[in-house]
Amino acid sequence: MKLIMCPTAPFDFELSTTIFSDGDREIRTYYKGKYWQVVRIANELFLIVITSIGTVDKPRLVVEVREDTRLLGESLEKVRETVISLFNLNFNLERFYKEVSPDNIMSKLIRQLRGYKSPTTQTVFEALISSITEQQISLAAAFSIQKRMVRTFGDVIRINKSVYYAFPKPKTLASATIEQLRACGLNTRKAEYIRDIAALISDDKLNLEKFKSHENTNEIVDELCKLRGVGDWTAELTLIRGMHKLDVIPANDLGLKRTISHYYCNDKKISSKDVRTIAKKWGNWKGLAYFYLIMAERLAIEI
Image 1 (cartoon, rainbow, N blue to C red):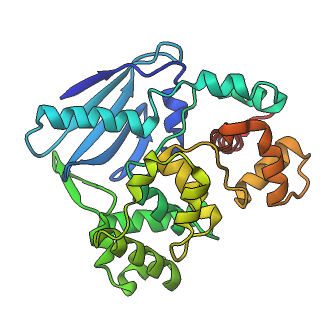
Image 2: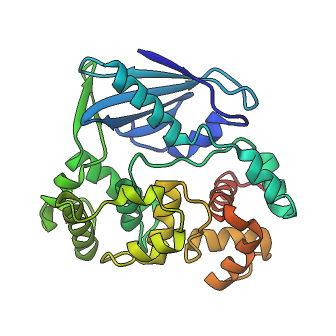
């Protein structure tokens, strides 16, 4: 079954999915013009395969939905809503572009990254767990751990004799042993953090999804930081990735410090305080500016 979707322009599909080009083909990846991922809708798994048939200014997507069960109309509409959320297809970038235009450096980066929409995880839980795995290690090492976690604990969908994996449910990770989590590459503390958070959700003592409707991001950060193993960096990253809350910035992020230093400070060493000072010029768009800077570094853009 296929869906035709028309995102709010501008939208560069290739640019917005390129960060997944090194992804696991049985989990989530972008390869030869196609993006695919397993999504969970009402406890059913679906493989979505997305292709662009439009342009940046007239974007149009074809979403192929593959499943091993009968796809009902209600589920199909939920798939549509999920795809919109994953890539923030209804978000109007022009507001961001206009309000940060006084920043000459950011404006130059935007001209080369026009249409880039930052992706969002399907659940806040996924964003939080992924951010915990990335604490104080390289992204390459973190992605390897995340891949092993998904393959070990994620639910499976089989399509045409191929196997695909969904991000693990809280209940599954709550039931895992520390040894099983460590086998994925986590150290003992991170394994405990992840299992404890998963257990809180599984026992209905924590509802991360409710934070999506909260407007005060400082309060959300404070609430997340009450969880063992979660500090400002992890909480702020979770808000951006899992809730599309764009008025925060993970100022302690080493990669961000390096990137801001390169584009704004002639590659001089800078502090987290320096990052927050520079980020003030982006107003309520700090989180999106963060994505644009990281993408600019990834593509080695010079201005």
